[in-house]
Image (cartoon, rainbow, N blue to C red; front, side, top):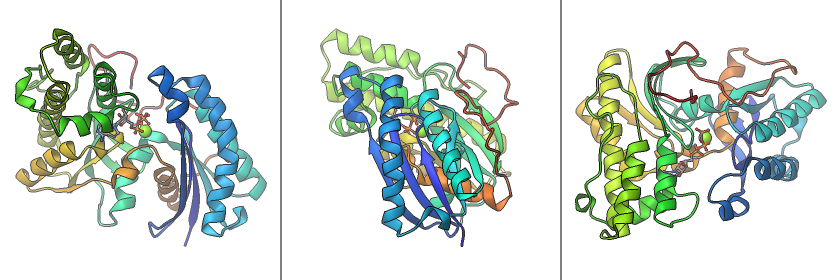
Length: 345
Ligand SMILES: Nc1ncnc2c1ncn2[C@@H]1O[C@H](COP(=O)(O)OP(=O)(O)OP(=O)(O)O)[C@@H](O)[C@H]1O
Ligand SMILES: [Mg+2]
């Protein structure tokens, strides 16, 4: 049974995991830097990079200890090599290179988004390719046809903000702090989504792209009006976002129906239970199976990086020590740029 050491450091979580080929997570540790970034209301790249330097080596040692393993017993070292905050990515990748070189084990440079994209297969052994994936995280909101390892077709993407970003901005407007997604979800559960009228950008348009900037501005205006309860604004925002996601996902399903075995959601926002429920209902209407990883595998973690390493190792797709860290790294490099989109992949 192969065991891969996974390392994640692309944003503000420093994480290490040992993942076995039979999908058992032998050990995993995550050191969150939330407290260091909270005073700034978001992630400060320089603070994150320095924290990764301080945290990563002892975290890896502790993870090996938890599993009762030594470095020479792992079969490969996999690390996020992008996309993400480049300082943090470099810390993780250079650490992985050093460990791979010292132990004479293969290095696997993992695309963080592939980590998210394959995480449902770590959680669910019966999930086969190809599947339709909604990847909704802090930096991305995409609909992807996942045909296999390293084989993605992007059907839709956001032309402005990511969905997680919209949750975080809404949290900031409502004074809920950072990170905002879980706080917005908790407050939304106590509010009336019908009490505040909010727009649903791009609803009904033919291509399954997303836009959340206008929704975010509408949340700000609703808050500034001073007449709505915060819980109602949170509920209305979450419902508007979910309505957009379901409409866009249904469009994407229509494009690949017949090709896919399942509808899958991954990325940090996939931890949102209201979103999962709505996607599950959509899948049921379409007679498709639905899979979502447990919430702890949705937000950034190293187990998903280790698992991507397991899948890549099985195909012999290892990397040389000269592989570079990449701040941007689209899963589908052939996807056409979307009109109105900024620099985000
Ligand atoms: N329960 C929830 N409801 C809504 N959003 C959530 C929930 N839990 C987490 N999120 C959001 O998920 C995002 C974090 O996800 P993730 O860790 O995958 O993002 P990231 O790694 O920063 O971005 P990327 O993966 O695109 O590089 C944050 O925006 C956070 O607010
Ligand atoms: Mg992520």
